[in-house]
Image 1 (tube, rainbow, N blue to C red):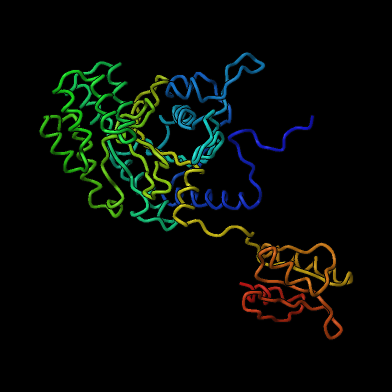
Image 2: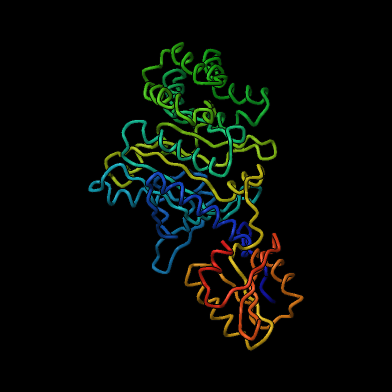
Length: 434
């Protein structure tokens, strides 16, 4: 039986047209990260399962991880996320490294998930993290980087919001105001996560199953009804938990006059699922009704290195998947037309006598860093334009005999302008097509 020509479920083939889109996205990721002086890093595709068990959520370990025992008897996994690898690497060098550490990566990740819109099993993710920044300033920078990245495509605050919360606010509500134990807190976290996805009747039912006292129910509902930072301040004052959340209040005052403030919105339902978040948490939310969903998320963590018995090191970062990014850009019509390759010139010849002359012209132009295709073999003159247009070229070169010597005719297919050059007039040819 012949093998299937289909990809493994949840994975993708990247034909040249798809690679043009992927390269475009990755290039933009690198450009923006490096504009903020972040440095690229990478790690192995395989890690020991113990690394993920130490700090990842139960769902990832029990349901999503691709793990196996290698020939040496070690339990290993294909990396489902980059943060544990990042933590391991930072733990090795942070004591002697200058702070803050600014790192980014675009790792290939694999999770056993149900494929659907915006979610596949294999994907790439733009990860950006900063460690050891002064209090709240790493958070300020990360938010600006996110906005700079998405607006570089032409996105506006009418297209996306950064929904912001703080785990210290949530924890204060759960422990100080509601006096919940760990099990009840975990259940209520799940309720928060579903609060926008269920009816009010269903939400009341879920709350009542966990919070039996009417005072508890009212406090929690007051919390869920907070719509902006002003209402949050009133809530904190009303229930006298300002001191527990003072650092977040200070952070909000830092960002209120920033250029990206119109993109920021308080949302009490943002809690993030992974255990290592300890401060600010956020999700980037697409406002378009056809793609109304979170496209990325992240937050601050102080205890990430403790799994290696290292002293705490404050950090904050985010992850943005290539699939959700592409969905966002396509939904808002922000992705440029990459259906054709962006090469500079294609060279044709109609006579075998001009073959080597065409190869030599191509060689000279490539040495000047131009992207040159040389058509392999002769072609009839009346088929040249159609061939070049099908390939997406704007400029065509035809090497031919003219007045007893070899010359090259350059045609601009957009405005139909054309000009003849000697084969050694490399710079003049470049000036014409640039």
